[in-house]
Structure formats: C-alpha cells, structure tokens
Image (cartoon, rainbow, N blue to C red; front, top):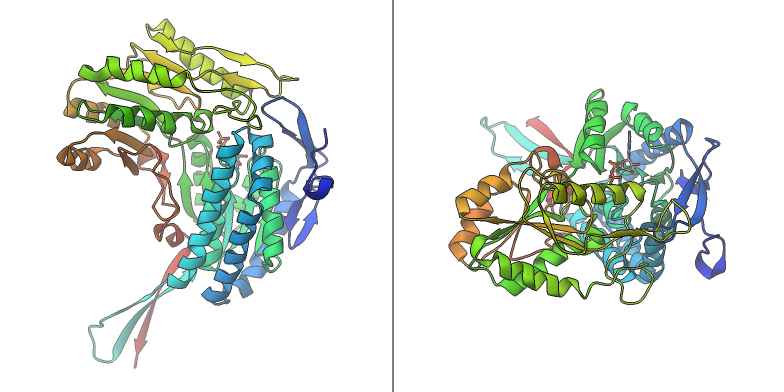
Length: 489
Ligand code: ADP
C-alpha cells in the first residue's frame, strides 16, 4: 500500500534538514504501520549519526540570525504556520488516524489543539519581558535580559503526533531558538506534514529540522553535542531518565514530560452523572493512551454501586473500530506490546480477585501481526492496591474502580506513587475543592474536569513525572536564559 499525499501524489517520506528534503543514509528503512490493520503504509529511509550531525550544524548556523530577528517577525512566521495547520486540518488528521489509530474526530481535535500552541506562542513571542532592578549604589544600574537558550533538541512520542510537536516547537521558535526534532518512529508522517507546512510558512533554512530514524543513535548524537543547549522530551519515564543522564554531560537545560498514574476521585457529594462522563472522557480518549489519562478510580463507598451501574450503561454506547469509520469512539492500540500490557494488567487483576463488570476482551483483526490490536473498554470492580494496574501505567481502556471511606485516606492513597502528573476529583463542596487541590501532589489537578489540557495553562508533573512546564507563559521560560547586566555609569 502506498499512501497517497496531496493531489494523489506519492506521500512525502523524507526528512527536512537545512531547508532540504533528504533521505536517511543508514541503509535501513523504517516501516510505518497502520495500527488498525497491520498494513505497511510507507517506508522511510532512516537517519543515524551523520544526518543528526548535519541537522545540528544547520540549526546552530541558523541560530546566529534567527535569534536576532524581532519578536514580531517570529510571530509572523508562527501565525502563518497556525493558519496553514487550520487550513490543512482534515489532511493532517487523516494522516494521523492512519498512522496512529485514533478516531478521525479526535485527530481533528488534536490538530486544532496543536495549532492552538502555535497561535498562542505567536502572541507570547512579543511578551518576553526582562526587568530592571533598583541598585544599591547611586552610579549602578541593574538590568535583566531574556535571551534564547540556543539549539533545541525536541523528542516526541506517538500518542499525540501533532500536539506534542507544536507544544515544543512553537515556544522554542517564539523565544528565538532553532530546533532539531525527532518524532516517534511509529508516527513520523504527521511530523513530515507539519514540516511541509513550516516550509510553506517560510521559516528560514536551518530554523526547523526534522530527523527520523534510529532513536538511540539520534538521541546520542543530540545529547553528546555541546551546541545543543536544551532538551525537551515527552515520553516514558525510563527513556526520560536515560536522556537526563546523557544531557548531564554537557549540562543542557531539560524539560521532561514523563509517565503518570493519575488518580480519579469521586466524593459522595459529587454530581454523579458529571463524574461518570468526566471519568470516561479522561480515560477513553485515544483508547487510554494518554499520559494524563486516569489510571485508578477511587469512589466513596456510599456511591460506588451507582457509579459502576451508570458507567456500565454508558460503556454500551462505545463503538470500537478503525478510526476512519464513522461513529467509532475507540480505535486500535498502537501495537502488540500495548495490547499485551493491557491484557496482562486485566489478567493480573482478575487473578487477584477483581471482577469484570464490563468488557474484558481484546481481539486481533489485522492483516499482519504488526497491527490490528483492539481492546474492549473494560470496567473492573473489587480492585485492591496490590494489583499491577494500581501501580503501573496501563495505557489502555481499563477502568479499575476501588472504594474509599474518608478524604484523608483517599489523599494518602492518591499520593502514594512515584508519579505526579495529573489527578482528578469530583465534589460539589467548595471547601473540599480547595483542600483536596492543595493536598494532591500533582502538577495538574482537574476539579470536576476530566480534560484540563489547554495551550495557555502550564502542563507538567511533580516527582518522576517530569521537570519543567509546557504551555502558557511558563512554557516559553524553558527556552530562555536569564542574563544579568550590571552598569556602572
Ligand atoms: P512511548 O512509550 O511514548 O513510545 P518512549 O519513551 O519509548 O515512549 O518514546 C518517546 C520518544 O523517545 C520517541 O520519539 C522514541 O523514539 C524516543 N526514544 C526512545 N528511546 C530513545 C533513546 N534511547 N534516545 C533518544 N530517544 C529515544
């Protein structure tokens, strides 16, 4: 199967280095698979050390001029890119669904959300303010400048193939940095499409570079190079820790958005319908393959039976299938490993006494073992803290429900994890809303809100869920250095 690009032409499968579309010279090819069918969509020639080196060189050279452009100029390029993304949103969404699996409507939503970062940082580029500070001597003046940090290495995951790119690139470019991006190997086509639009928007050569291929070779080259001054990464805690160590050798600035294990708490004074809807939105988006997706559902003992009943009713309406089919809510899991993890978590829970209230089955219907792995949304009751699913990120459509008695108890249980990305709770009490928000050791808290992510708010985690924040005015700080200039007059 050869995926057709715009106007029926063969899809662009190249990377973008120094303003040119080039092929990797590693000799190996990357297979891009449709996770709904297992079909190979296209092959991409892989990049390794040499291509990454060239991309860094080009970004370093471009930095010398790009960093001196005015904020207004950079804002103009970003604004053009924003409009191009919106104009091409159907096409980007279709590519995303083909390589990633999420339902087309969701993919469309992601493109708009992703473009939102480009729009927001086009505006924010003009609001990077320094400071003057009163000096302690009459003849001194203290000035604080904000300057772009330098060449940025951005490494992104497959679950949000567009938004994770724009959330990193837009603030970096707005700040005056140049970028070398490595997208996830399973979803490079969305990245290629975004780079085609960057080219159309007219970014000068070398300002944005795309390398696709061997993750460890590309990662190693980026991390060992002194010219790369900043790493921004979204992905697993395991890879994040490795990159953090590698980045240490040249003291790069780092932003990491890593794994999570989000608690979702429903107090007995909650609006139950709203809580059930919030739970499903938080859990089943992208088939549960979301780092801020709820993993553990704590429901206060008096309402747990009603909660389960209402959820079962709603789950009956969820349609599973290829993301391109009309009316599908749940697409495939990304690959066989993802499927095995979901299966293992459910089996482990059932072996330890959990009851399957809904779903529980997975199936493979692809044309090859490379894809076509689906799982029913699965609701589990009688869950205990000893089960794997209560500790490890499932990244699938499983809802383990467990009861609790008091506020104090549930906060202790919710915080008892090395992760600290997102947490959710539902209550109608204002006082409890404040108390619990403050007590939860998480970077993002949704109060009666299952889907809090938005371009203008800070996104990021406590503890092993990461370092730094993306989004909002916080998101540009990681791409800026602070310079203190002392004048004697
Ligand atoms: P996920 O579970 O979301 O795939 P990963 O952490 O495995 O999370 O992948 C996130 C990104 O990190 C992907 O682009 C992947 O290719 C990249 N990656 C994986 N291993 C390495 C590595 N050793 N060095 C650099 N990047 C890596």
